[in-house]
Length: 261
Picture 1: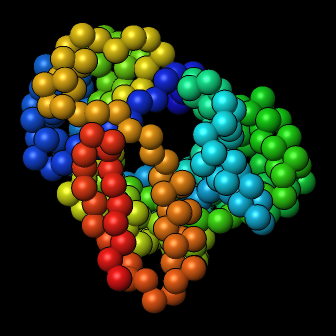
Picture 2: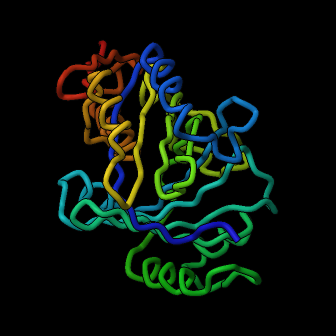
C-alpha cells in the first residue's frame, strides 16, 4: 500500500539547468531515484486544486498564516477515467507539513467532489482520510479552480526513506478544461531553465546536503505553485493586454518575476 500520511518539513529552492547537473552528480552517491525515475527521465504530475468561489484558501495562504490548508486531486501521467488518482489534503502548521491522501479512481474522485461527498467511492484505501475530506468539502463550497502540472525528478536517501528531494520543471497551469484526462498542457508558471528543488524530511538536514547547498550558493525561497499561478491569473485579469511572456532573475531573495509588456 502506498504511503498516505506524511508529516515533514518542506524546504524550497530554485536551481538553474547548469546547477542541476552539478547537484545531481553530488547527490548520486547518497540518494537513489524513486520508482518513477528509474529510466533516467522525468515523470509528469498533474493536479486540480479546489477552492471556494472567492478563492478563500489561496488568498489566505498568500498571507503566510501559521495554519493553512488546501485540497487537490493528483494523478501521475495523463490518466484515463478509470485510472488511479489521489485526493489529498495538505495542511501546514508552523512550518510542519501534514499531507493525508487516499487512492481513488479518477471517476470516483470527480463524483465525490462534484456531489460534495454525497457519493462515496465504492472502494478506497483509507476511510479516515475520506472522513477528513468529507469534513473539508462540507466546510467549504469547493470547486475546481486550476490545473497545475510539472515534470519531476525525485530521489530518496539510501537507507533513509525519510529524506526525499524532488526537482520540478516546466511548471504550467490552466483554468479551462479542468479534467486531468484532457492532458497536462498549460501556461508556464516558471520559465524553462529553472527547477524548483524541494527537500522534504521530518529530521535535520544531513551534513553532506547542507554543504552542497552552501557550495552552490543555493538559498531557500518561499514559493507556492498554486500561489504563483493565482498571482499571474490576477495580473492577466487586471490587464488583458499584458503579454504572457515574462522574465525571471535568481538573486539572494530567490526567484524574481518581471512582466514584459
